[in-house]
Image 1 (cartoon, rainbow, N blue to C red):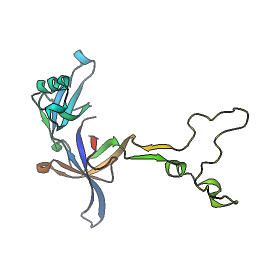
Image 2: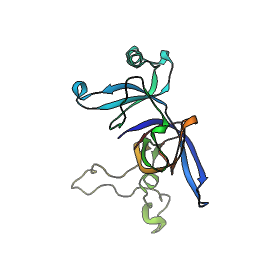
Image 3: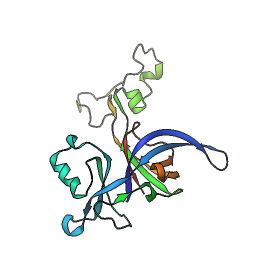
Image 4: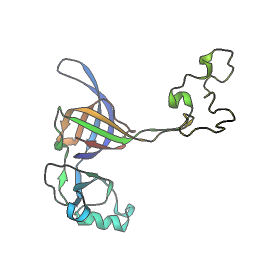
Length: 205
């Protein structure tokens, strides 16, 4: 799937032609520079590597600096490969937000917000021990029983228990593009996308 790398700006809402208030997310999409072109002869598959968001040379390795120098650009903070571009791109070309059009649908993926160590009620939507009945005291949010008796005498893998929540790679599919603002490199999509403000997102169509 072809696409772009972007940065989540935040959420807002706009009114459509019928006067309905639509929640939406504003994304700074591109411009992205083509930093590598994968070919079937050399790499075994066809794809285009895009780089987004400049960073200082002192913060990049010499290998990365050499890689970006071939494309005639400065070091980039985020690099992602995309397949199935209809257009032919060469090393050093720029892909802008105009790659998308209003009304089409896109998939947006990013790393979700990290929420730290959470209990089973928040992490897995447990109801709590006994649903606050049957004389439960001071343990309404406890997980309850997690194992069996002398057989199998262990806790099964995958048991829903407390642990780290969030920080996962999440993809939201079929978000409608409400507005494209080429002069400011902005893309407005309906609904919410994963990640905190200023998080890097990958937009695919």
